[in-house]
Image (tube, rainbow, N blue to C red; front, side, top):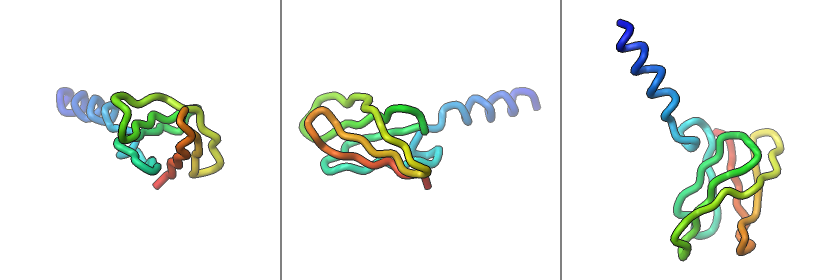
Length: 77
């Protein structure tokens, strides 16, 4: 029983932000994640890597802009 509880707690800690209730969207979005904090990870088409960008959070919506000017929105489900 202890092993089952330990595995359940470990699995909860490994849930990606999108599965934890936030979904990000942007033109050309390859991947995005947000956990409710001060920044969101955004990776766009044409770029080999993503980056963390600051967000302005208002309720269940967080918005930001990448270095190339692409606006993104993360909403809580």
